[in-house]
Length: 451
Ligand code: NDP
Image (cartoon, rainbow, N blue to C red; front, top):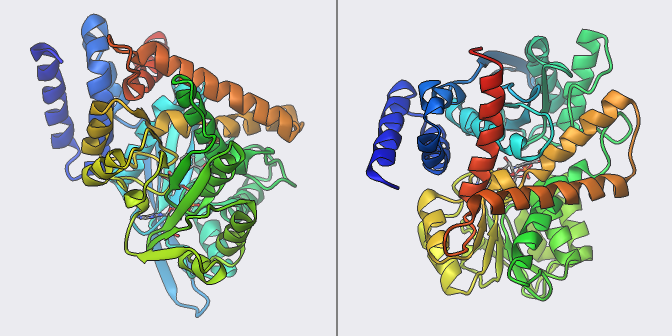
């Protein structure tokens, strides 16, 4: 980066951090995009004059609200709800809802910001938003989760709609929670519309939506590997997380010929040297989705596996690493360990799971590395396909949706290669994803005037 560009980046970040104090995840996400798009801005100075980046980092609207509810003992509980409506330049606000005790404004804004570029990359007409609450669904009864979701929507319903803002799931929000939120929205509005995606298969959910993020991440990784004439076949794969994204990443990686040897949750990870095959994965899905148990229980079922309390899976020798749990879950030391162990490909299923220093280590070693906004975009893309099906009042087959998902992931990969290929031929997927996503949003914003 030349001196002038660096001065622009530093000045922009100084203003942003002063204006948004304490929002460290938001600062991190903006800095990564800014470093990628700054050279493009320098070549197109009218974008600087038009303050396009200053506009993009300011949410169009932020809603913060009280969510009161009664637990099973009749005690009053109060949580905080959020919806960040980040950017509607290319379509209605679109992005998931997260229920996790760590949720705060910084995390909501970083996720909504990332969503802007990710949704742009999908080629579908979707703007960007993100929402959630510091509510912890772990250990709560179904009735408590339902009462919470109903209270959450009793406020949020006035801000969302099929043509305004279409939420979906994320950490802590799966089919059960989307169902409760959709039900309350329908009751309050007295209308049955595609206001949520990730709905149940009996009331408008798209086939393949549950699978889409994990499958899409594998399709993207397969496209990266193909640039080296390589594939998943015979590769050892380390995956973190054991929720929606991790489960279906493990399923597809196995189908493509890989051997998945790890899964994790926030307490620790399991290592199964024989591989987590289809039968074992079916048990994990039952354990996590029905029993709502912990990943450590895997080793009781399969004693040849080991459980490592309080550790992450990145010390395990693998060819392909797929972080699918949460932000900043793979640091510089862990990146160096992965590299030393011969890892050739890192594909993010989670949002911003790799720290900036770890990304730098992967890029310096010139291995295949894809940021979540490119490789996990299959989830929101299939949400876009769910919106289309809802508007048309029809339902495609799983094969049709999977076909479209594959095409979209290939298109995203091509866009990254187009904008991210460096002089020596190395594909910088971070740069490619950020620049490709940015150009479309910036053009749409310019065309719509100062709004
Ligand atoms: P789930 O709630 O289904 O699963 C989350 C998994 O990550 C769980 O295993 C959870 O363990 C673990 N986890 C959560 N927080 C932490 C933490 N602080 N430290 C360690 N492990 C943690 O969520 P999803 O699978 O849907 O989401 C995973 C990631 O993928 C997130 O970054 C999300 O934003 C991203 N994503 C999801 C999409 C989707 O379609 N669902 C789309 C695109 C991105 P535990 O049970 O202990 O909390």
